[in-house]
Length: 130
Image (spheres, rainbow, N blue to C red):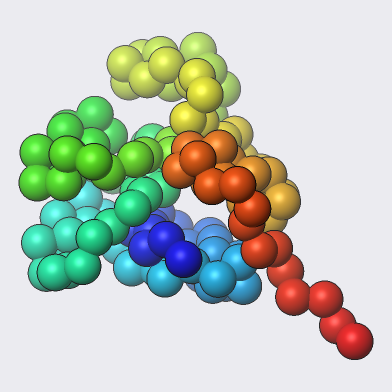
């Protein structure tokens, strides 16, 4: 399964997202800030397939972070997440297009976005009881 770099400054949100991603069978590398994300990326010798990053984080320009990550990992795919409205995102130079999920979103929506972004045919979702 894909390895995902999860970049989210809100610890509670990051924990929930990590749980969802692990339950979907992904390997997850967590970061709470842009510097943490850069260190985590640099320290990971294995491929990182996807970065899921919050658009608005303290002292971070999302576009700069993505550019830095992609300079080291040109094949890295990115999904942007945010609770802000699209007009606010445009102030950050973000086009809330196909690789964007507006918070709140469901586990199924996140799984579908990952599948779409990575071009995965089937993505294992939550394990069913029984």
